[in-house]
Amino acid sequence: MKAFRAIIAFFQALLAFIGFGVIGVVLYSSFKSPYNVILALAVCILGLYLSRSIYIMMRRRGVIAVVSGDNASYDMDVLEPTASSGVQKLAPEELKQLFLENKVDFNNGLKVSIWGDWEGRKLDVRHIVNVVEYDIENKLLTIEFDDNCLLKVKGPSLILCSSNYLKIVKAKEVEWQIDIDFPPIHQYIYLNNGKEIKTWSNTTWKPHEFDIGIGMDAIYLQG
Image (cartoon, rainbow, N blue to C red; front, side, top):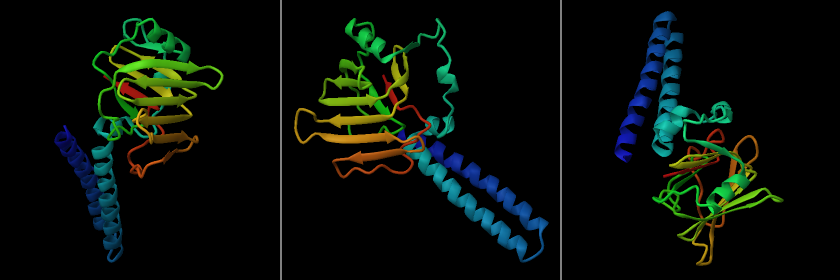
């Protein structure tokens, strides 16, 4: 899977660089020396930088996440799911009630993605949901898993649930905890300030600049 992602990322970056190369050739043939050389070289350098960024971003986030866009619109998520889609649009209280009534079941477990961040720190392993709680007063949704992992979501909204995923499109803050029964608990906090996602941890973890995107789903639990 990683090899396939690397190949696709390479070809996407190569296509971008070829596009800049074509622009460079056009500029070189359209201006007199030395301006043609300067402009063509500047465009090629810019193309090389952007192509490299595309490659790294696709390698880290995944092809689909990059294609969908870092600053994606939430408009499609706001639309009411159709009856035939198998997707339910829920309030946090309704999500809690569905789990209490065993009407939502992910028997094979769920992998965790937080604003596009999904590798390492037990995010990319499957977790079985044990408990779903919602504190109405503090607007805090808590999802506890069976392997000593805990997810806390402040201000969750636009919750979409199907038979193989649970998506929380918007949130103010997300906290991911692992090894909660074996102190010290490892904490990873993501704060949405409206412009970007700020992170904090009581470990040495620091996210790469391409790991997280504010335009991506706050929480995506996928089976």
